[in-house]
Image 1 (cartoon, rainbow, N blue to C red):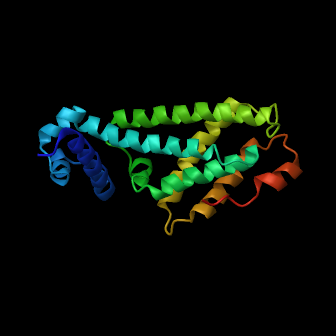
Image 2: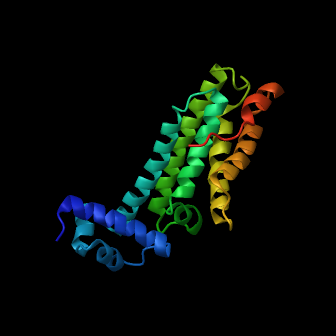
Image 3: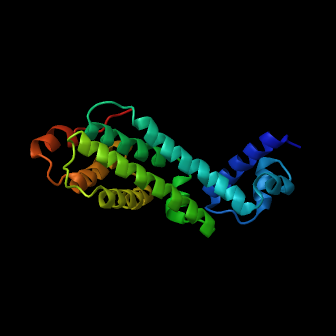
Length: 208
């Protein structure tokens, strides 16, 4: 039998694989079989199937937030950095096979939906701070309602990413970033000099 720390990681990996393969976890037997542990290990480490699912999705959300934080150090102007952050988010969701399960197939329990709501709330709070930084940097108009803009952007990006993930063939990261960036700049452009948008807001996405 696997040692506890190994068993916990094995269960997380097995549950993630089960979600990716089947879109849901019907029962724990398939997960513990993948993980090579006993059913009791699930209850020992996570308390329940829902606890295991919550841990899997928490890792996904933590990864999304880490991708945004890493993009904060991309340099350049405020608008250029925001374009890079947009690309980083697209790259994370397009590169993570769990993303379509969460964003399109749905979740199995209201507790998981609450996790996403908490994650989106944190993202929105960060967006408010970030938009205010843009105002202080004279990259955004002072009359922009940053709370409304942040809510609009976060909710809209979430839905737009879900649509893009469904498309066949799926657009490239650069194409998806360009399309999303177009809508982002349309949301925040009120009062911005046209020349500034032309010079900075429409530059090609920075590639990794």
